[in-house]
Length: 217
Image: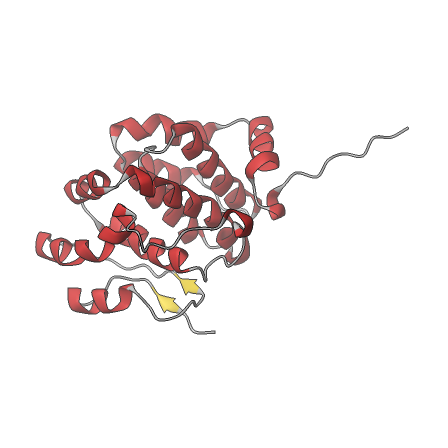
């Protein structure tokens, strides 16, 4: 299956050409060092504005298919690009992205954070946890901090279930996020096991739902 590389490398023209791939294809993340200067940021920002504004033509995640098409849904592709862009941005650029977010677009971002739990489970790759944390930080608890916590706990639980230590990734996200987001990230990081199980039972994907113990007579 064709893979869409999400590394922002080369010239801004090359990045922009890769942002909206044709068709729905499984996505992959790559990393690499990149210092994004102001001109590069300004050149690429319009590419992501439809996601941040939630334009009328913007794709949505369907509730009845919420856990389907993970990694192939067009929003998964686009928001993974945005996550990488946000992760390469400096502090001032990250503030610009957060301020550009239309609250009406917030739920799509939180849904992405939850859906990345499946990517973590399937690939055992910590880069998907990083991507989820970047999008959660960009969303900045705009929709409702409780929904942000739920989404982050689901991603964290997926990471722990495949032996990925989430602590260093949460630490980095906390060090780079808006000051108002610190308590939300900390809460999700420190959620007690019993509370994590309750969240997974109510909101998690089928693969993470705790199995109920059978009563013995």
